[in-house]
Length: 371
Image (cartoon, rainbow, N blue to C red):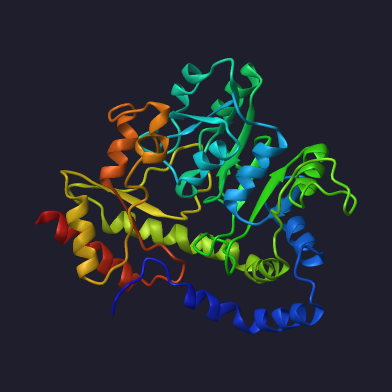
């Protein structure tokens, strides 16, 4: 039997009986855009993230975009972020004409190297976007202190990290804005695209709510130019059905990570994920190992042949992406990001993974590394 990288069919089976009547009820109501289900979800997710307000939006990418839009970040502005993450982080910056300024990563956590942020700040810098990659918090005290000294906004990209904690505090509520994704592969995923923005300032929350609905308040009165960033009620119903299970799923992911760590103990050429002392709750959206000695692709291809799912997040760091070449970066500018792109491999970590499956994954990788 093959082992998928992610098996959402088992997750659906666990919620199907509860979810289907709720979907039928929603269909009977025909209230698909925003509405009480979205409001209920916003209240629950804001409380879960220890934030004051939440604004449901159409995707994690749009969560990042609307946060930038709310602060009028655009042409001539610079936003500092990591060179090693999913494209949406820097893509959102460019979407409004601002310039992403990249910083290398800490090789242990894969998150932004906070010791290199300050040297990138200029008179044009308006914000820092730390990414809580793979479910582990970035070093937020350092980020927030730098931002305070230079009067910069902090927009947390917590799209992979709902429920993660930094020194006992939930991510997404530590900066000015926190952005979440409910893409199906996330720890809390819907049946398509969905996202949310967390904030603590009522004025910012009101502005987000207006901007997500074409800048309209009241109806057909547009004092701002917004866009259609609304979260569908259907996705809210799905997320509300899954939400009570989120913490149990997180515990299962953490158990899977601990089991993998034991299974890989002493394995030459394999480095298991590092968990920083400040990352008091790593939620393991991904379990990412390093494979040294230039053997990552050999192992990756071997797993494919064995029917075991795995993935490379991310094979090309952002500064080397073709669409960002006009920024002037070159090979060698961010060596840790480039090394991570060559060595990392994500393994199955979904909550329903069995011990036998974990043992098979680890044994196969250990054999492939020795070839």
